[in-house]
Amino acid sequence: MIYFYVHKSTANGQWYFNIRSAGNHQVIATSEGYHNKQDALSTISVIRKGAATARVYDASTEQWAA
Image (cartoon, rainbow, N blue to C red; front, top):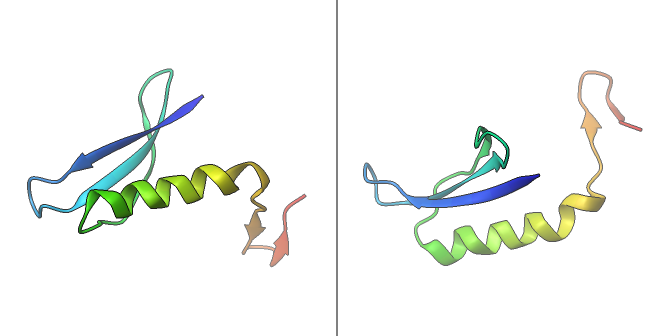
């Protein structure tokens, strides 16, 4: 299982999210920076809606993965 972790950077004031493993809280992926929290949350919403049916393109073989 995974979860999204939303946070504001103290270095630049931008909002970021991580996708983390629920078991050990390890970071799996990190977002780009967003100027406001709502934009970060909107992107999370898009990912959540599309992730289950998202296809994978393998650039090394220039083919869609099975």
